[in-house]
Image (cartoon, rainbow, N blue to C red; front, side, top):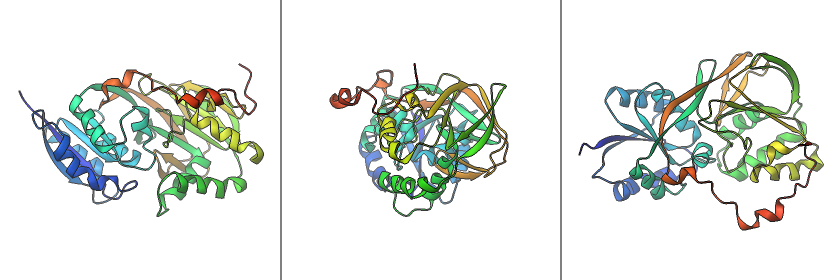
Length: 318
């Protein structure tokens, strides 16, 4: 039986240091009867894109991104439009796409998913000349992404402390949007354009988003009064955020932002300066990816979920 060739692309500085254990775990867990493998380390920003492109030209069958959502995006940009399949070993801080796909955060368990070799096709999203696989945002979201990239300490506590630091003083912006040809103007804290359902850390910003439905989930978030913020924030963890009276959610094939005056965009945790006018469009079923065999089964909520099932803040009328 012909073995598949795997290239593991490891970001040595991503996330919280888990990638340092990967080489040992690969040698221990990866099924050598199914795969031959090589390992490459990224040496500079976006090096993963070049390594992925080179892998496709060298007839590699599977490229495995070892890192966070930004590292995954670099590999996606090199693989989109090729026959090469993407695998993921989560080693970032938030690991939004991995969590959406229910890929285990444990390194050895994630390698077992590679051994299962179950494949699927998911969408990607193009914004102007950039590609991303998970989630993008403008406004407050993009500001926090920029600040988080500059912090030396990673993890949820660092991310949350930045939100608390900047939120009281952030002024909302007026955005002119064109959603599938329909023009609208909104005043928002931030606007997200989601392929997957979360930022990471299991903060579910877009509960209705699916990575393979051919749509962008557009989430428009107004600024919540400080006194209501703790109760609104909890909805992120209970797949209820789109029910808040401060949130509007809609699906679209294409979205145009006419006046992103700050020009700052969060692309899967990477803060990028882009044009004021942004055009988001779906690339349906454009990325081959390895997913767990159990991916079709929804993860059960914790037993204590029912205790919080009744919302503590006003929700929109259904």
